[in-house]
Length: 73
Ligand SMILES: [Zn+2]
Image 1 (cartoon, rainbow, N blue to C red):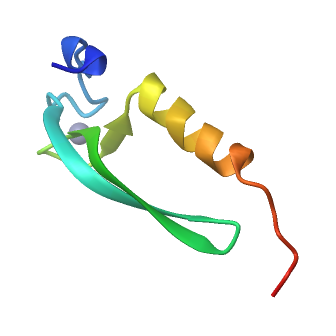
Image 2: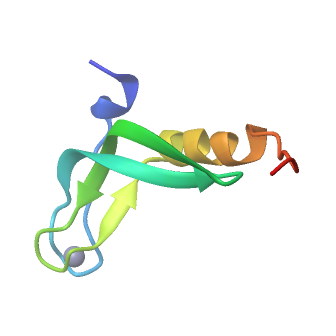
Image 3: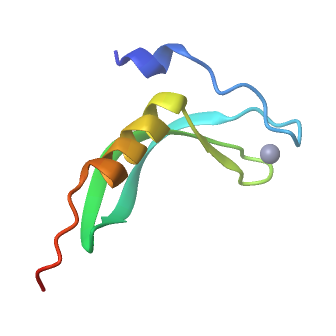
């Protein structure tokens, strides 16, 4: 089991409990579409609010920053 599966998302401000699920996230990095699969996400069944874990956000940020920008068309 992955590390981040240990932690809970807690509760949504609306009072609902976040559901644990895996989604596909598409990012555009330097003009390229990067698809991340099996991204753990918390989704509130009441209001539809979505949250990501810190590890996931870090991974996404690293991807965004780590990609070298190429100016060639
Ligand atoms: Zn909610």
